Image (cartoon, rainbow, N blue to C red; front, side):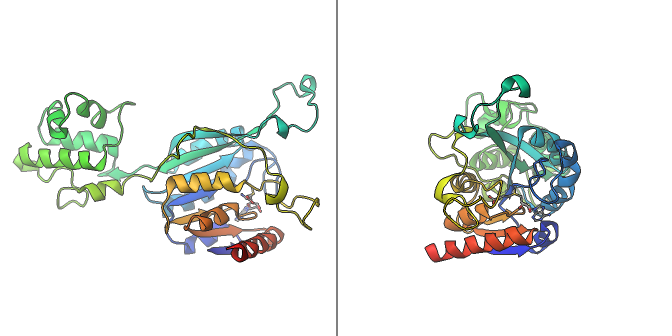
Length: 318
Ligand SMILES: C[S@@+](CC[C@H](N)C(=O)[O-])C[C@H]1O[C@@H](n2cnc3c(N)ncnc32)[C@H](O)[C@@H]1O
C-alpha cells in the first residue's frame, strides 16, 4: 500500500496502471477545504482529475464514482467526454435511521434524502478508431460474409449476429470463445483479399485472451442488486479523534463493506486500486484486506495524519 500527502493529480502520475479507481471527492456541499458550495462547480472541479484517470486507465479499468445524485448528474457529461462509459448507478440506501429526528418536509418541500450513488463506469475500448461494437460489425462486413452466417460461426441457431453484430442497444460484448469463433470463421471463409479479419494487433487474427483484455472485470456476488441497504457509519468503524464518543473525524468516511463490495466485484488479488481522494483511506484499507495493491492520496495534512494512523492500526490488526 502506498499513500501520498498532496494533490492526487500529481501523485497518480507516479502510480501503476489501475484496475479500479474509487473516486469519493467533492460533493458540492463544502464538505472539506476546497469542495465547492454547490453541484454547479463540480464539473470544473473534477475535470482535471478525470483527464488524468483517462490517461492512465485501460479498457480493463472500472471507475466507481461516489457522489450525491445531483453531483453525479452534473459530472456525468465530463466523464463521458473523457471516454468513460456509464454502466450502472448503484444506490446506497442509508435507511430512515439516517434522518435525525423529525424532518419538517413542509419547509424543506421534498422527501428526506437518505441516499448516495456509486456509479460504475468503464473506459470504452477502441479498434481502428471505432468503439468495439462498431468495429465487430465493420470487420464482419469487410469479410464479405452475410450477417446470418455469424450464427453458423458461433454455433447458434439465430442469436449471434443479432447480439454481437447488432449496432444498437441489443449489442453485447461477445464472450472471448465466441470472438475467437467469429474470427476463425471470417478468416477461413471470408474474402481472402482482406485478411486478417478481427486482428487486434494489426498482424494476426485476435485471440480469446487478447479480446478478454478489452473489457473491465466484473463479477457480482450472489444476491446483490443495485440498491445497497446499509446504515450510515456509526459505532466502532467510525474513526473518531479521541475514540469512544468523541467527534467523528471525517464527514464522509465510507463503510468498508461497500468499498470491499465494489473492489472485489471489479478486480482480482494482485490488481492495482487507486483512491485519489483518500480521506481516511477506506478504499485502500478494503483493497489491502482483499490482497489488492492500493495507491491513495489525501491533500489535507490533518486528514492525512489520521488516515495514516488508521492504516497503521490496520497493519497491526493483520
Ligand atoms: C469525500 S472525502 C473522502 C472520504 C473517504 N472516502 C473515506 O472513506 O474516508 C474527500 C477527500 O478528498 C480530499 N481531497 C480533495 N481534493 C483532493 C486532491 N486534489 N488530492 C487528494 N485529495 C483530495 C479531501 O481533503 C477529502 O478528505
